[in-house]
Structure formats: C-alpha cells, structure tokens
Amino acid sequence: MARRKLVYEGKAKILYEGPEPGTLVQYFKDDATAGNGEKKAVIDGKGVLNNRLSEFFMTGLAAIGVPTHFIKRLNMREQLIRAVEIIPLEVIVRNYAAGSMATRLGMEEGTQLPRPIIEFSYKDDSLGDPLVPEEYIIAFGWATQQDMDDIVALALRVNDFMSGVMHGVGIKLVDFKIEVGRVWDGDYQRLVVADEISPDSCRLWDLETGNKLDKDVFRRDLGNLTDAYTEVARRLGVMPTNTATMPKPTLIN
Image 1 (cartoon, helix red, strand yellow):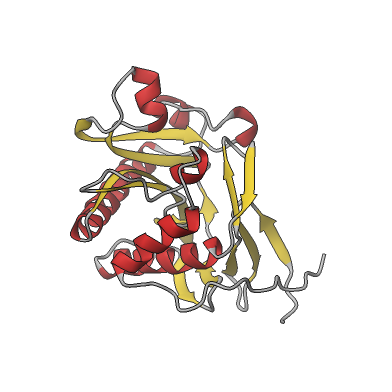
Image 2: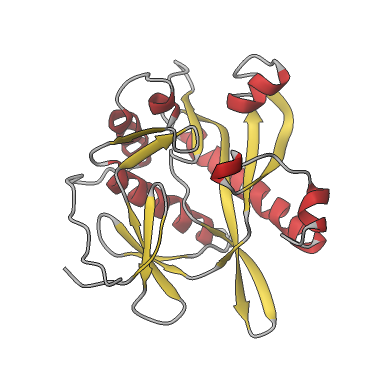
C-alpha cells in the first residue's frame, strides 16, 4: 500500500495529499456517527457504498454543468478530488419537514414544504453546528453577498437534479446538505460542490412505504444501515461488487 501523508481526518472521511499539487485523496471510512459524534459505530461496507454513491451523484452533477471537486474514483474506497477552500457552512436544502426542522417548528415529519427551503449552519461540532442567518455569514466574513447568491443557485440546481434522480427510482428526497468550496484560478474564484453527496448527507424515504434509506436508520435504531444504503445503490444501478474492508494506507506524520 502506498505511503501517504495525512492532511485531515474527520468523522467519516480521511484526506491525504494527492499525487499532484492542488489535489487530495479522499478516503471513505466505515465509521458512522450521529448527534455530532455522540453516537458512534463501525458499519462494515459503509465507506465503499458512500464512495460509489458520491461518485455517481458528483459525476451526474458535472454532466449538467454543476461544478464539483470530484476528479475520479481511484478504488473502492478512495477518490481523487480537487483541493478547495471550504466555506465553513453546511448548506441544508429541505423539501419536506423532518428532523430538527420538524422538532423546531412542531411540524409533522413528512409535511411537504411550499417550496424548497435553504438553511445554513455554522460548521463547528463543539457548538452543535448552529443555524445561522445570512446576515451573520456576511457580517463575519464567511462568505460575501455574491457568494451567498451563488451558493443558493448551486444548492437549488443540486436539489433539482437529486430530486429527479431519486424520484425516478422510487425514492423521495426529503432533505440534504452539501458543503461548498472555493477554487482559485489566479485572482478568479469559482464555487464548487465539495465533501460528499451520499445517504450520510441526505434524507431518503421510499416513495411507497415511507421506509428510511439514510442515516436516520442508524440515528433511530431502525435496522441495518448497510442494507439501507445498499438498497439505494441497487436502485441507482451502482451496486458495488465487493464491499469488503480495505486496509488503511500507512501514514507519514
């Protein structure tokens, strides 16, 4: 296994230095967390499934002109991605009331919203990723007004694509979150979809039964998480042939 230098390790992924300047290798772990890391488990095969599913969604977005950090999949657990400057926000797009929104507003889960609603949370696990208004974001310099306009447009395009794809395989896209990063070309900046798009970052319900096919299965102890993610991959035609665990690369500290 090639020796790699660790750049960053998060709850579900590891970033290593890439083979060329401006690139990183993103490794998908089998770790599952909920409640900002309060609940943890290792789910065999989860990283393989998320790698393949994120590749599917990122490739589809690129095909319709939505820029992403994704370059190519390297193997069953790793992707080659562009190094980006991550904006410290989670961009949440909601089509139906669920999760924290339903709790916060006393709404029944599954209530269709009058239009897609976009929320922003500040990325800080120690604070519980608090929701923040656009005024905070601009005042504290996390993003400019032009950035915010571009992020909203980007999020709505992702929502259109994802909603259509999932509906076509009998799945309701309840909500999802993305991260956005800056890519610089000299003095010119463009925004791209970064991190991942997978059942870890979406709420996905079966259209007929309402069964959950996302990380709520783990959060709420509703069954086997790998089975839920495998069902999503099967319906999308990206079912990997082998979800066996691959060993981690050796690190140079």
